[in-house]
Length: 200
Length: 273
Image (cartoon, rainbow over all chains, first blue to last red; front, top):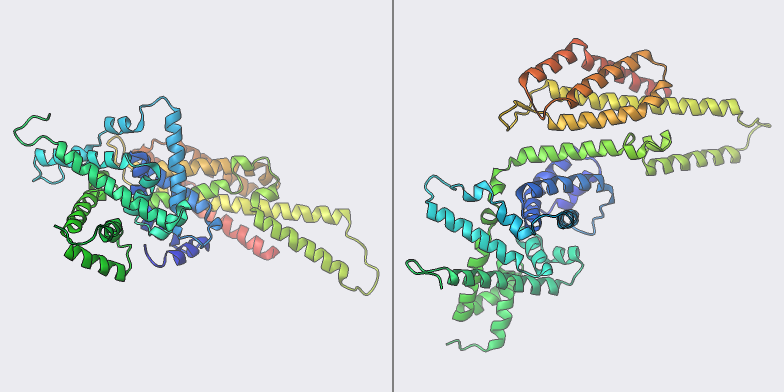
């Protein structure tokens, strides 16, 4: 997090030239990753980030500097994503994990470089799928804390403030989440059939 | 075999994710580093954790992030936010039923205006006067109300024309290339902004009639025609469509005329002040 985010937000509130543009450029990728974590869809995540910036801009006067601007913005994003997820659930669509699997994006299967072999490409895809599964399997609060720290790059104190919980809770949840992801990845590795052997 | 007792190991392992995320203080980090140097089991735990979290790098999980044209995304987000604010201000559908004063000024400004009016009235009553003063006549009050309404309507017209002009400047300037193969210029944003401006214009229309300014009314009608044409374009407009639009804007000298009229409107306001 950049130290002058508070000053930047103050400039956005005061209508400073180029301030809002700078804020958007600074936060957009972190918000995109968070949105992907919630929505599991590239296009939906981009829409969610755009919508978040619109809401931020319209509500900028209501921001109070007792929270970090990114904390505030990430809450706007989270609320929007949760609304989106509720809407999806209300519609007769496939549940999220299946929907995610049914929509493999092109770049995940496209070669990352001309030298990448089909095997390496497949491994990369599988790793991504395992990681996604590991993150999805976390309890809701742990998953949110992990995403805010890992993708949102938020400080632990800010996460605690954002979620309204104690710093100790954030620390212990992060510990459990990281351990669970590591264990799940290792279990998946162990379950992989060794070369030349059939999976049991 | 690990000679260290179990308890420090448990405490150390709980701090490993915090170490990974740089959330430990320098002293805590140094203590943990010393523990890891002397404890093979915890060191292995640290390596496993680090490998797992490194694997969850954004590049692995979100491969399409690199496909996004982020500078353009930022520009679009900013434009969308500003357009939304413009649409939410006087002229939005929700505002239609509200009185003109309420539509043109946000709540804090209205509160400030009311407070200022009240203060001025109180000052007038409290100020000692040399002789008996007649109260304000009904005609005088109606005239003041008309002047205020006229000024607000002109301000609305000025803003509508200024925003319309900015939109047309975008259209006559270098166009944003379209990603799709069936068109050449991306006018999605301009279309959306045109729709918003037209909605605003519809709401101002009644108020602007009171201006009795034929030149202003004509210019607003012409701008409306161009905006309607913009809204009818494909999202990925062809070079021909853009060319026709530019010709129309240039032939009617719309940009220049908006410039002159808005300058006069501003000047008129300054004169009144």
